[in-house]
Length: 358
View: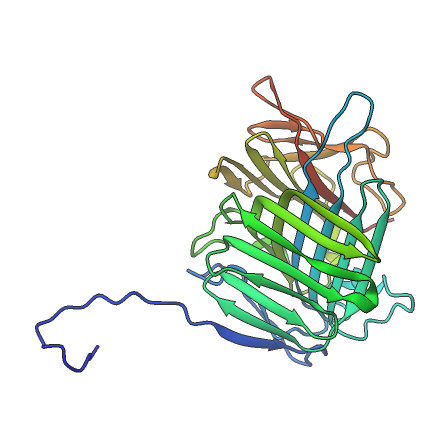
């Protein structure tokens, strides 16, 4: 390295700084073979993983926040929430997305999905098609603008902070979500470091930039204010084959119970029957220290309980009362937990059930 006036005997240590770069993802999937990244690099955790997006591939960036609960003796917790998903997909990639449009046609592969839940439990949702999405990649973080939707997200290079903004008054929603990370990022089978496998099941991958963090949500929704502080979360899913045909069901969720953050994932392939056939990922941290990050079979068991506790679930199966999650630390339900027989303080959680077979 030559530095002009420096003498040849002078030694100089110069830090290598990340250089942001821009990537444009077309709203129309390419007629080409997708190259998918299945092993982690030293940086770039939240970067797009498919190059390019074709008809059968997908990437999506997901953000949510749920208000910290307020309890009383005679009133159920009032917990509003928000969730944003920024999709880049082919028509057959995340095939469930196209089914949500009234005509079943996905006119753009770039779509922003928004879900707002009010304190009384009612929901409002949006599907906003976008033009060519502009991504800025820096360090481990990613930022993106989805033109035509008013929606964007901005990520810090070290994944310490993400901000989601929406400025769509004509659609009835304006505001922002800020998530400050309080738990280290991870991949399906281990920590956020180079050489980690990214597949959660054949043809699908996942990475978790913010397993748990402080969230501040401020929105105006059709003239009504929705503002709260609570817990936030951000992850990134991707795949190079259609989502539905490869899986029979998927359970996913995250929660905060006392000082513990937990994230769980269980996928049963289309020909799987249950225990032993599942692909799983388990993550537990406490006060910012990772206690468990593993995808080893048997490390976590997730089963529904109560009403509609059919396992494996079917498309006709309604939502169960809750999920029982067993790992090295035993968490039961979605709002309460135990550690070594000791009851932990109530917390918050969000979770999903994908049932993909009749």
